[in-house]
Length: 74
Image 1 (cartoon, rainbow, N blue to C red):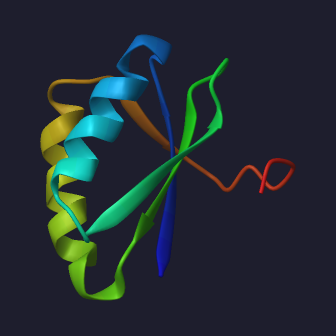
Image 2: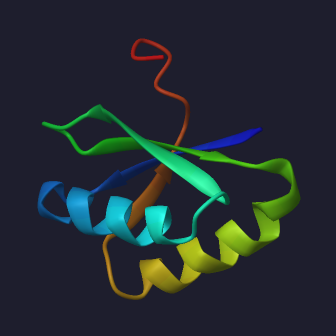
Image 3: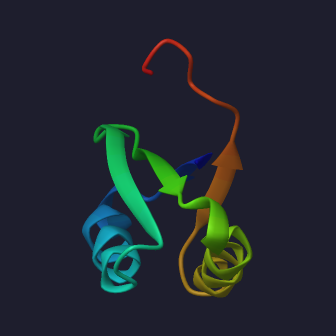
């Protein structure tokens, strides 16, 4: 399992989660901190390249920043 941690706008959490969940079985999204909009995306090993393409596409529409693992939250 590959993990990515993202920071997005708080108002976009639900939309982001809805879109990723729509690709059933590729990845799961966990909100680590809803106040600062820190998300963890757990990607299934066979779908890393697919999810990375989806994230790149979403970066054109949403303000998404990849961050280092927030160790204090995990």
